Length: 280
Image (cartoon, rainbow, N blue to C red):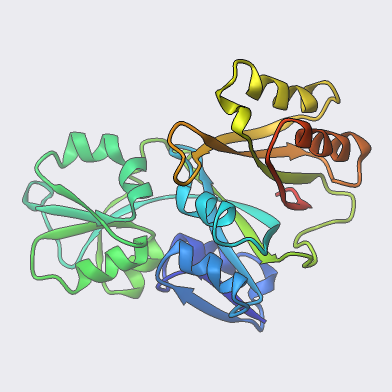
């Protein structure tokens, strides 16, 4: 089995993947961006992929949400995993914080550690990278006094020093990852009596009318279906119109869940089931 993840090796995504028994005897395939990782499943380059979709401090990972809603029409969510996140400030050599000219990382950790950066490194420029491990790799090869935000494993892999451990703005920082497979793939996780979740996206031209979203959400409320997450993203090319990602408790085999999703069609132009899978 080939398993895709956001690389290079040393990312939080790789840590989450290795925490799953699926990685045993599997080939791990790193990709340079989240979009490429999702599309690797769409294009059958890998059998499954693990990507971040939501962070406790910064909310939804837009690259994942947009890829699933737009380009990866034949990809489904088949499982999920939640992992505690502990960002470290790392550099190639020992550095005083006052001497650091730039901090490199993926935009999510830069935001997750924003309070620390403002308080301790006000002089440092924030520089985005495609992943935390790539940021550490950049810093490891840089001659400038740069630092990176990333996992301890990445610092160890690329020979960097840890200047500060656990610089997240909240010690309870965590990220939810989702397993992706081709539509119709078997779910991943403990399906023997565990709770289930269902993910759906929906959109409609009626979203400009008063109460349209309330009517959509009432289809779940009136049937007692609990929503665990709702997030809006812009519809491409249509300013002022939005697409909604919804996660709910329950399996599509349950009448309340199935009926609620079916009822969305009365209000929406697009309703797409992203997956039903065991909850982490």
